[in-house]
Picture (spheres, rainbow, N blue to C red):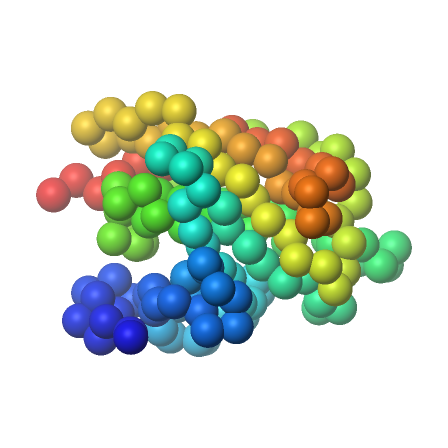
Length: 158
């Protein structure tokens, strides 16, 4: 069931996805915004405490001329995945925080028409900061590593 009060409060829909058991749909209520327009459908779930997985579904609009996922799409996905993971960890409702830094190492090309996951680990939380790292992977066994990353989010002061 969709929590309409949470949607109004956070601007996000966070509800069980009937097409993907064990996953939660995580999308902006206003589909004119970046997440919906550029990244598209995203799913989130907690793997173990402090470890989350965020999924996107790359398609032709995410590709470069090599028919691989464009690096800008991967970077944008990683940035959004940090916030999705923070949401899964219960550390942010959504939005109203900012990325302070994001370091990414591209390892191989992302594949179109195959789900792409960001596996995100919470390294440390302080009063105002979240330190995270992870991998962007594809394949049923995560064997296709697209990128590694570290990032810091500054929580809203309030």
